[in-house]
Image (cartoon, rainbow, N blue to C red; front, top):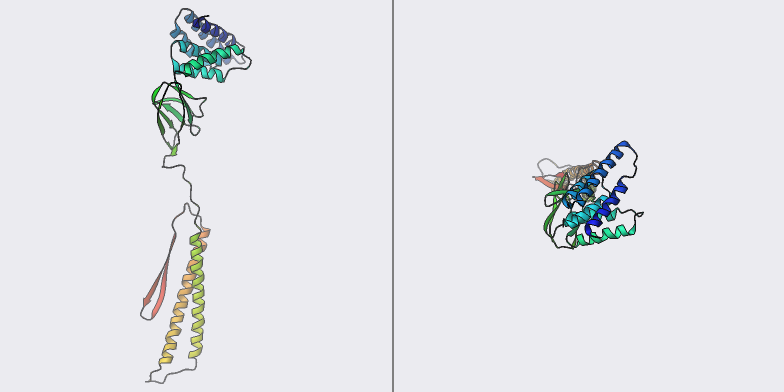
Length: 310
């Protein structure tokens, strides 16, 4: 049997399948149109017009994608040496081939598919779902794809595009019969992968707690010493016109202890309040936290300034 007769035999088989009854008036109308197009394709094939036969089969394929139409297209395209299209259609025919069909039909499809695969390159795409896949600038499908892509030998550009993501592209050179796996990573339009908010760091709260505790301890200690000096000064007096260095020193210490104690309580309280706020108020993102304590001095006076930033 010649290749043309093999083609016509499969075309006749396709009509039998496509004319099977279906439910619904719209389905019946579609099947009727598909069967008519296949009939016209057979007539053109019998007349030796393979291009015309393929054209009619493509029209039928656009209306209804079935394994038998795909097989017939693949057979015609191998005769026309349209290897990329033949590989695609014959691969589909094998992937959807019903178990109820004769094994000889499957073997026939496998034979033509092997011939087509030896003439083209096969590309398997991996990327996230919902991405448009372009080959050399032409849209060929959307992920997840039904199967591999078939391309002619040579250089090609494989790209993935998705709204809100930066286009991913891979340039490759492929040989006839070669199979290549291409991974296309789609990054967010803002740069990098989808942003992840870093967890709030704990160390600022620990530092604030340490500063606050130290401030309270210093304040308490200073007020304790102030109370001791106040007790020492009770009942002491300095006659007018005489110098009393010991009493003057006790008075100065009393004042210094008081000012230092107030500063310690102020710094400790501010640090503890900042720690509570830092832990209680949620932040949209992690920011650097800093604590700056600036000592102040003017003559015998003392104190400190504390600055918190988050």
